[in-house]
Image (tube, rainbow, N blue to C red):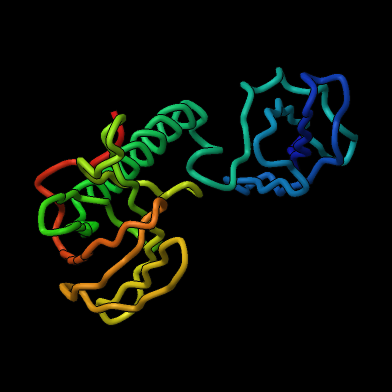
Length: 208
């Protein structure tokens, strides 16, 4: 008897169950199955049909897996693409770190009484602590101090200005302008603050 059509069925569970099949003409070179899930492995079988009925099923095909993207079609690429993604992210983070590290943050130099000089760092909130001799309480140096116990609290303002607060008063001065401040023991000092746009050649002065 002449075969008039073929019936194709596919199973997602190695032949335990079969989805609805499709019928194609005997002269059709290809068949298109619908309702198959991407990423699921299917085995398929075929029946020949004529006026008498259906033949026995053919042997099961090799497993095939419908896919909707390159990664679904090539699962071996998933770890490779994931690894490349991690390398790319790592490279971006390293580049950002180097860019931030090499970036100029600027710095502020403070001079007290034309004698004591220190780099007090960068940022909008700064401060100065006086270093004193343990016996005479005379000022022997100055260091950066952003804490609550600082002798001077300094805030950088727009336009290259500074707000300086000592124990009793507040002053607004330009970069390079001299201002008289009073320290925690009541002594008066001449203070000059200078803002620089470049990175400092010396480290921020701090207590040892």
